[in-house]
Length: 443
Image 1 (cartoon, rainbow, N blue to C red):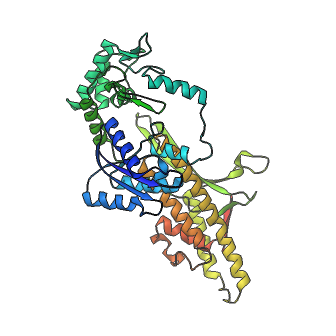
Image 2: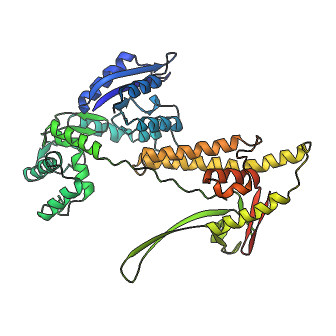
Image 3: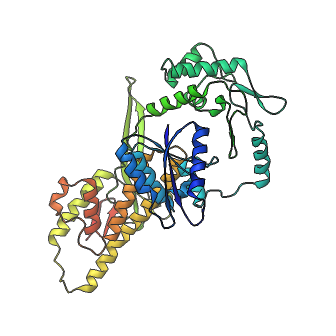
């Protein structure tokens, strides 16, 4: 893959541009990428990231962007994530040349010191393992196709190696996908080392394992030709290119917000009414599988029956009841005098509380999403959606005390989208008190 080096020097990293470029060239040689160019910035010079974007946009091509570590993308998790999302939108793949943590988000979680992520390893164990890795000795369970020889190095298991070669041929020459490859191996009676059936995950792992070109990568030590290769570098690279092209583009699902989040309170205990989504599936008598999604508001004290009983409202019913009450309240409200500064300040403070909660919650969701993305559970596109939610929540908080964020009237409710409806409610509603037999809206 064509690669670009990006280096934003900080006060902590005083390596020269030549040192960065040399490390980048070495990385490309080891990973079999084609080095195209490098961009260097920081410490008084023009930032390199903007020049990188201009280069990528003018070329109209897809690249691998290589950084030494995540700090060269940003000084905090949010800055790193914003750049990853932007680069992903341009078709770029980002990797860190840090062998221990090549995945950018995992690297960011480690290097930027986020709480809950281990910052230390047992040095005595690590150094011992690293010494063995330098010598090319096998560490841990060997990959399918190899076993550990008497001298501690990997040796080829002929029968298993043939399965590996055949899997690569089916993938790169015959064009079969991982599902069909697994099915064919299982139909032919070929079993894994443990005697089980081949799964999609096992085929995926086999096709992207650099051990099969003789490369050992452990504990930050990458050693080419550490053991006999089973497939050629050209075949392995072809498999990676095919996998990259076949990777599906998954559009992030937009989570429909609960409009009354932070505004609705239980009329019995005073606790918040929180939005809950439940998915249910069942089978009809004719055998058809049916799925449904239920959304409702429930009192947060539901688990404490001594304090409050179980109170719940279906989402559309409660929101319809609130908007009906809001219409009546806004029509009958007497405009306050412009000179009533005390009332204005009180209302501004009341507006700020739900908005601040929105911003805090959006930030917590964003950090959780980063951790999930680092584990491969979320795509970069999905992270971008969490960033949009975070930006919207912050914008709402900053608008406290300013002119109304949404200047429409309640009569335009049916024509509003979800974002406009939420902004209108935050601007015009102080609290919603919810009881089993009705709601009361304070404006």
